[in-house]
Length: 206
Image (tube, rainbow, N blue to C red; front, side, top):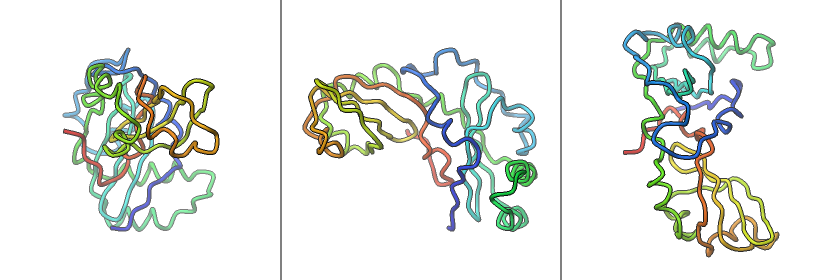
């Protein structure tokens, strides 16, 4: 399937949904009654903020926030919508508005409350003492780091979430990319939602 993971709608916000564990994000409201959401126009009418999207010829994945909770919407892509998206000028001043108008016509297949799979404190504690190599083998993918005098902090993605992981040792600057592997996890926090969630092929963790 030809895919296009769009960055136009505030992609950086995917990494700014700060929380420190717990099944629901601190301060989040009650889970939304989604029974009245039939089309993307309904989503746009109720959302507080867009959190990004990804689409291909067959499907759309769209993320939004409502009352402090984050949701993922799945839609089947129509040929008409796909053709209109394909013809858009990415650099047009009203690009985002044009995309929204096209998306608004799509029927919603499902709405998933991402907060229901947010790692709990016990989930996070289970990683303490593991080595960086063990995290890597489980599927953690690092995207950056901060190397302190006594410990090293890495920014990592795993499943549907982004993490800040502090390891109990010093890493040489030249070894930044892989130097965490022999070290043990000292602290781990959820810092946001991974952009994996806007991949049309994404599925929630069991």
